[in-house]
Length: 172
Image (cartoon, rainbow, N blue to C red; front, top):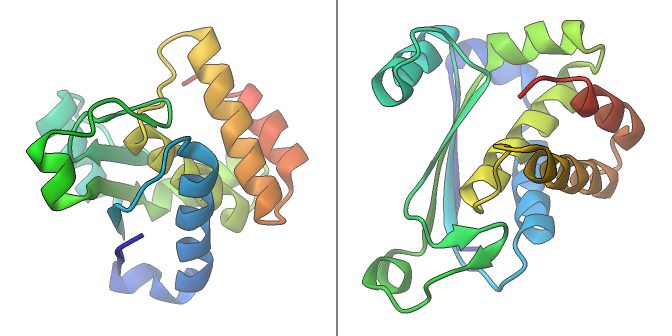
């Protein structure tokens, strides 16, 4: 991996361990990428307002959300590189950007009884998996994402059983 760029709003810096975030990104890529990779990732942990603005601008939904993932290109499909010869892939090696609302993480940690650390790792893994071409458009794809996320939580030595139960009870 070339680089992991992490930006955390000042209001949330004391609540977040960058090393743990970096480990989650690496583990998510290691478990999600079925092909070799050498891409960089950008992560921004920010406010509900910023996620609402991005959600409105890019998806037409004027509401905050927990995570948005913006792949740099569409070369990845369920962890496999689909087109290795295009100039963007060869020249830029940039997986994409992830934006997470920390207030949403805190809210969901209470709702799903996961705790902030587990919730943040679940949502971050979810974002990375989206960059690697995973989606949850149907039941089969959703189940693949749940399985990968649980594998990642297990690798990080987090409560993967609680993560699995929590993910299976969610709507999206």
